Length: 543
Image 1 (spheres, rainbow, N blue to C red):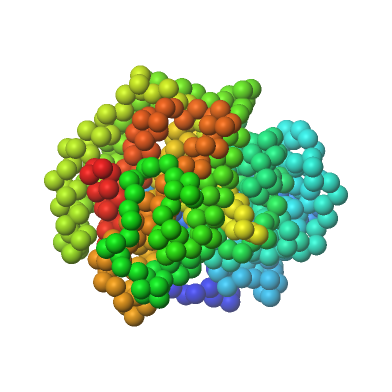
Image 2: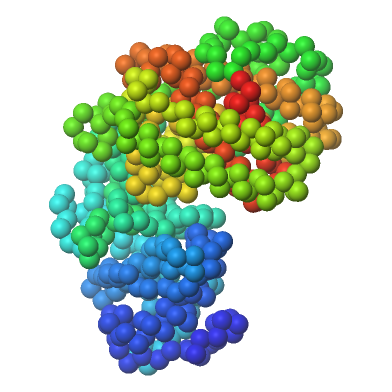
């Protein structure tokens, strides 16, 4: 038997007389492999999303061969069932190797097959596997009708394999770098449908030629036994970059808060502005420009432009029904309210159960949140679609500074998988474009508070309370400038966001939704940061 504590013994635990290519036809082996081996292996993987739940058993939902001449690899679709009566699907490619030098540290199983001793491993660690997958995409024909379908963007011709490596430190997916030029993302957690990242990437870059997202190169899809098309992998052009917008903002904001002392700025006398005002750079007082610097505001303006351009492209389709704009209606409203009320009730319970972890401003704001629960609930219910004139489109869905790369003073948007907690169907629902804007605004809010939390004393001499006050002023100017530029760009292109009052209503609704969503994560993971979404909620209910 396989002993989890024995840390991969030299001698194989399993022996099989079946050849490797037929091993998964052996039901006794499969049963033992799933029960005694994969459970122990999968729970240790960074991409495994079920760590908070109790695993019940694993089933092999589907498998397929990826082969070329004598090379045979298997793609496994694993159904992980949980005690809490739900399941998740994962993709795991496997290989059998006999050369110990090729074996990664994290092997799946020592095994003897036809008297050859070796290991079953995750195939992505093998260059021969990575090369085979690359070549399958590079030579894909326009119409592939086999079970495992490879596709290539016709723009990319004569691509030849040179090198490959695994990208380090990823969590939900595994990315491979080819020729230091292409990125192939293997989706580990998979769904019974085309992945939104694949759909959006093909639509934006292949169909609409949107320049500020990685170009779609190719993909791998599996047609399962129910004839459902499942995305396994997405290949894109790699964007040489200087890091993501989150890291950039943290560096810039550290300079901004350092300026408070360096420039001897009195926080109490900083001129303020209303939330959700549309601003241009000339509207920003000289005192604020002097404190923050013009460069950060110019970057915010560029990011607003790129975000608007993405939405304009997403709202410009009139043939492909998955991307045609839609108006608000009763079905959407029922879906939205049910989703919001369920999420709100869940977060309410989390706050009540974790309030003992809070103190200071966070505790004060948590009490305000609980005291105002009926007001917040009414806000979510007050979505009256009959008064809304704007349009819904496919959106990014999980838009924040970490999903944006910086290159040559420009921004590139990636990772269109959608909100991690949502079902695959919910991620494809057409939403107000302002939901993405709200996601970015919450990310700005986080960056401001993270800068204060990560530095504080001895870097900044002002009290935390004074820094929060300065941060809120800065947040209003950043979001006002973004909104001013974004709305102008979208209006000029006739993307229908609705009338002004409607835009403010939708933005506040989406900001509240995002902040309530964040609250659960913070209270469960890092209660000292719960002040950020709680302050975001307070801003909205008191505005």
